Length: 78
Image (cartoon, rainbow, N blue to C red; front, side, top):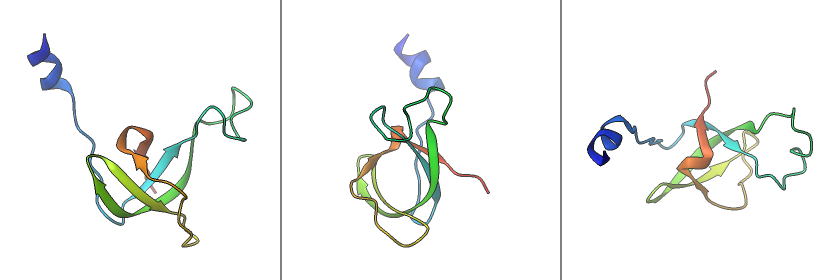
């Protein structure tokens, strides 16, 4: 079973300067209504911290306050 599972799992990896969207947490001020999108923004990856964590910045060149794990990010398509 493990071999079949591992065969189908695709690891996500992002590079520096990729655009991503981040998952808002349940306590985020925008997630009070269940109809509001859970993914938001267009953020740029500026640094890779290793083992799947990234440092992001907004499009206005402002840093996002903490690091983000790869499971909480999704590729942003223009």
